[in-house]
Image: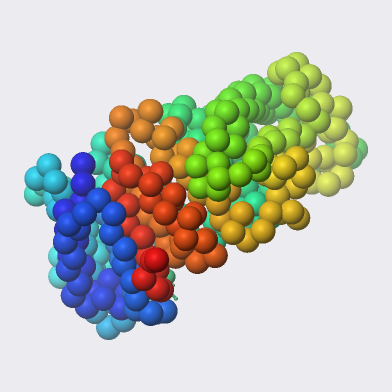
Length: 343
Ligand SMILES: Nc1ncnc2c1ncn2[C@@H]1O[C@H](COP(=O)(O)OP(=O)(O)OP(=O)(O)O)[C@@H](O)[C@H]1O
Ligand SMILES: [Mg+2]
């Protein structure tokens, strides 16, 4: 599937913008603030059902009463997104029209896979464990239908356990021990499942990442991601024991100190931490290698070639790396923004 054209009205700075995608790779060039990222945002909105950076009322062009995005596809399909006071009421509402059928949310079967590169992704390598977990959890949720479900169950159980830790004092620890058991049990069951899936996913990335990196940078650099499990890999029984053993400490702290919500991911570049050793162009190339792999894994799962949206991807990449970037995505529809025309 290919996006044939886009029509945007009252979407951020765009009052009325139309564009036909004549080739598989398109580059949107413009000055700062000319609305390049907004075009990617509109495409993403129609393919995934929501923005990657804001809520609808921030997207709506100032002083306009509706926005509209229309994508026409090569297979004859059409997705329209409208946000505004659709039915004449003062309340702002959102509506999707898919091949003429109205819905309030974009149904799962109509969501098309997207690989998105945002300049902010470059911070992933040096970001906090929370942000890295969020990133990998989001990608993994796309690739594994059960993962998000297990993660949600884990998070609900964690909240219940933390609520209990706040409710009890140290004098009541024995009473707490009996009521908290079922949450410890749930956390160890889901926690071990989450770790298994994360580990398998990172193994899949590691099997590819150095070679993929070499397809952008023709050299001998080695890239690896380490999934760092707090307290090392363990069985459900060991996980449960640790939660039980740390109950007193958790009670004093008022939250759960051990678990997959504390695990981390570390990027290695030539066996040392990439955040301290890789150059800016190298960091960009590592993240792009990660995106190529995501595109491949998404295709393997869905048999659909994801649409690739690359925001301001060329800066800091030398000519050779810019060329290999488009070469790597040659089977995908790629839409790139840039402040200058690519060499
Ligand atoms: N709701 C809105 N209504 C009107 N204008 C808006 C709205 N939201 C953002 N803008 C403006 O739209 C413009 C386009 O923003 P966008 O982020 O798409 O620009 P860009 O071309 O990607 O810029 P850069 O090169 O700096 O990344 C900006 O000037 C921004 O201030
Ligand atoms: Mg931008």
